[in-house]
Length: 344
Ligand code: 13P
Image 1 (spheres, rainbow, N blue to C red):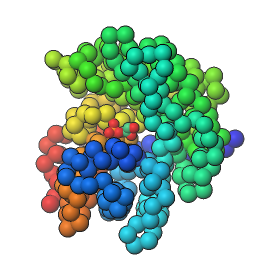
Image 2 (cartoon, protein in one colour):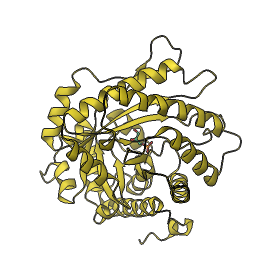
Image 3 (tube, rainbow, N blue to C red):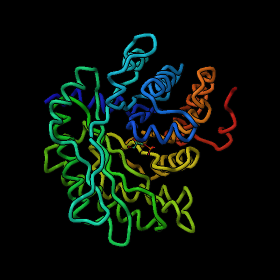
Image 4 (spheres, helix red, strand yellow):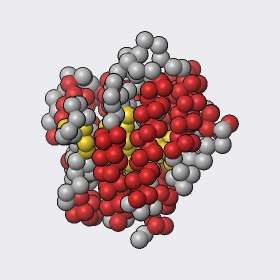
């Protein structure tokens, strides 16, 4: 097995001050994102948007890697250059989402399982030939009166471990993403319990499948109050609960944790990431704590762009600004006043 290559890639993805842009939205999700700015989700519009995002000058100071969607890894820029090459020329590491999305989990009323293991070995070989160095698989667990169930946690953790093992066999670093989603009115302790139970099972299954932890990254949710909770825990408490939960569940062999933003506003996700990193220093947490944000990095650029090619520079400015602030949060050096320093 190519352990050294896996470890080098995993470590490079969480290099100091850098994190990942998740740009792997499926075409269905892009329809919603573009819908919010009044743009039609055609293949050409998706290409133009992502080409512009990836070409942003200076973001390689803050962005270590980009997660692509299957369509994007096969796409050329308007000038005929593979989009993946725009990234590699900047020293940004390309990765790809390899799961096939959520399906209803039989035997449950409302839970899901992520599919995509069938034929995964062949797809991984193809992605590696395109130049991908890492992969991502997302499982979703919901908090409700009786959920997440043990059954849903176990089934999803098993699939994550199968994915991780196949990915490493193909020489690709797996980003293991068990997301406890923030929808609901639950308090932060319910999120703590669900996240703890989920991550325990994930690491049990990764060990059972002989996954080389030093060549993996975890992409978890932060431990948060539900989105519609009456009172929401503040950033200091989010940081305390998140680090306490992770110390119980994530082995120190794992080089890094790259959070999803998960429907928090970009500013909220940045404030929380900053507090988590400040807390990590004082409590000697063993892993790098960085980001793999989708909405947390793209909400502002999308809004600035509005589908107009004469606003490409606004898109890039907004992306560079968000990337700089999120990077500062990985060092615990973000200040809310920095939100206003966007040079226009
Ligand atoms: P968000 O940061 O928008 O949650 O997206 C991250 C991601 O890749 C979800 O799979």
